[in-house]
Length: 427
Image (cartoon, rainbow, N blue to C red; front, side, top):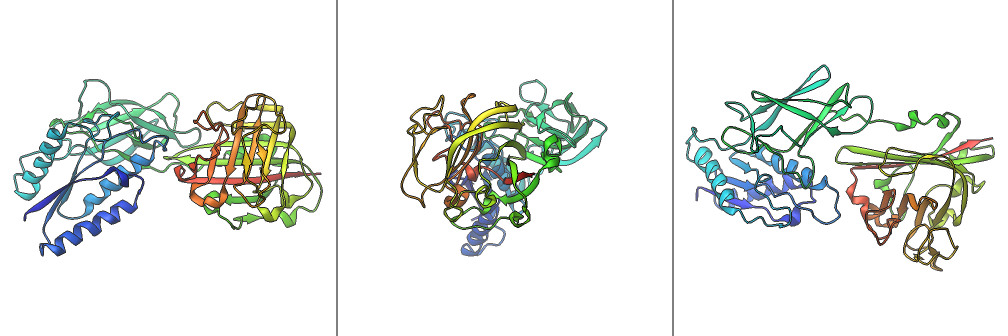
């Protein structure tokens, strides 16, 4: 046997970096079984697809892991982002898949080096003033686009402000020059970074470019942009990936709160695919017990289902109503709960939203939600923390029309980073 070709099953698409190691084990295992340390292994990148309500960045992370497996000697991967079908998890154009695999085999296994077998791949990023220059390998004769339009699906981010934005892209030989009116100091780039991405960049052989990301995405603390926080003291800080039936805060300064406090504030930050969003909300204190303002686990004895006054909301999340002096309500408890609007919260329904009903089971599903009922909006939710990575976590209303407060969403697994901070303003 000279080698093998492999078309990856889509059920692995959520494994991220683990997939690279699985591929190494598979290839090493086959080589051992066939007693052939030089057995070639050529494989297919999975195609873009919707994958339900999953994060749009889970598939690009998987593509990244598939790309990384090419470091195994005697392997190669073909790209399929230009021959996909977003409505079919198994695109039908297998003829082109087979042709591209044959190019790898002819070049790598049979030594026909005059045959181009790879599309453009990221080589280096150069910062040139307010622009980024992205240089590619496998771009002999220069780059082109398959539709004759400007290169698409490039995004860049500023060193000091904002998130990733669409970049204006211009081909320059074996490079693409990127800029945006919204970015003065570009520091990082990503290309094709979405599960539905069908980017158009290719080399002269017509083979598509690999998805990639490069640069140092800034780790911003948006707290510095919220003026009132200078008067607040941090009480709890928690990496929400550590949630569970029992957990410890990364920072617990509750013992340092020695005076009464008249304001409480929460800040939640979530990162998906390198793009972060935050929500900060402060309010008149709904309790004077500092042990009851964190995640309302059973031991805290925190049970609050009441109106809130003087909500101040700051957020960079799309659709969030920001402002000061607003009204809202809180749903904090460790119990199970139902969707009935037990407290007659304005604008609530009998679905899971900002008006729910506490169940008698005290050590149950668990709810940590703050809402702006006038705006018909969940500000943030952290539910079912016992489910660890599958906890219900979100900013704003969930995309599901059925449960706007993230109940049953299991969305925690969609975030690479998730953080909660709790503050008080002492008198």
